[in-house]
Length: 207
Image 1: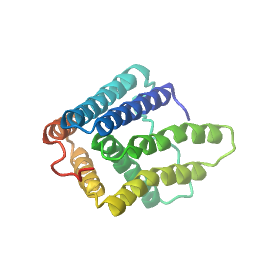
Image 2 (image 1 turned 180 degrees about the vertical axis):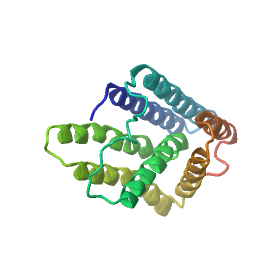
Image 3 (image 1 turned 120 degrees about the vertical axis):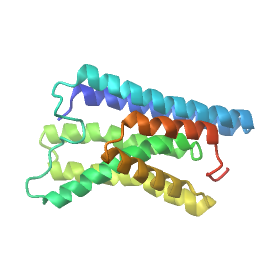
Image 4 (image 1 turned 180 degrees about the horizontal axis):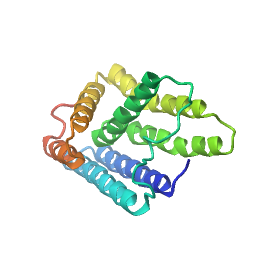
């Protein structure tokens, strides 16, 4: 179940989380408008870099062009097609949420809680490969870990009155819908990254 491509993607997105945390921490620590702009610009660059790097990894390491590290994961034969579709839809939405969460720079927990499911997936795949975990167990645990960033965003909203979770869900849903209509990945993310870098925090809760 574990491909070289998947391992490389894990490293790429782990580094994205570390970079985005670092930029957000510096911006928050300094507490100046210039530092805040640096945090947003740096996080935007890190997310764009991860996107480009992931595509290059796929180009170099993918063995079968009909497979992907998420879409071809095995599901239990007993699961109904609509259940499988719901899991895949949740996975797809969470991928968009992960990138957007790293762009936020409003909660230092976001980058690391986003990295957890990505890293956990490798462990779960290893357990499945060794016969210690079923395919159903993998998907249930992985989906459960993907719920954690949503919980963190909801708690952030309740505690600080932040609009992060609303902006995240609305933007992720719009991007996913456009992607399913055939829009290019870079045609979607390019303007999103540009708006984040230029618009700053006008739509977001200020810390």
